[in-house]
Length: 131
Image (cartoon, rainbow, N blue to C red; front, top):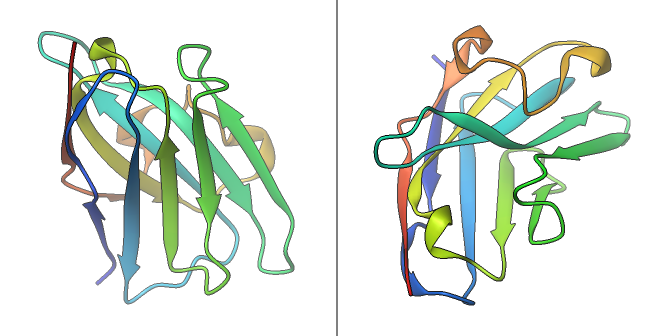
């Protein structure tokens, strides 16, 4: 059974950086869309970044406007881990961050794709940014 496990969360001051990891067990990403979501206190879950890739090497990334230029989503060469590098963190980035994966076409892969539409979803890692 495929499981997604997130790690790398923690507490940082504003302006700091964190790198989150999303590891897929019993699964190697082949042609997939993997997205990072977050849900802050009292807020709805929102997609922040997506990466679409095929096993031949093509990769396409998408970002929500709120994180563009600060966050970077990437995939390791073994295609088992998706990262979210978060720089210039702000207090409003405080949230539970979760990853999700699904085999869809490029046209269906973006941060607006609903969380519930993903077959594989992790439980999350907490990020807290203090001012």
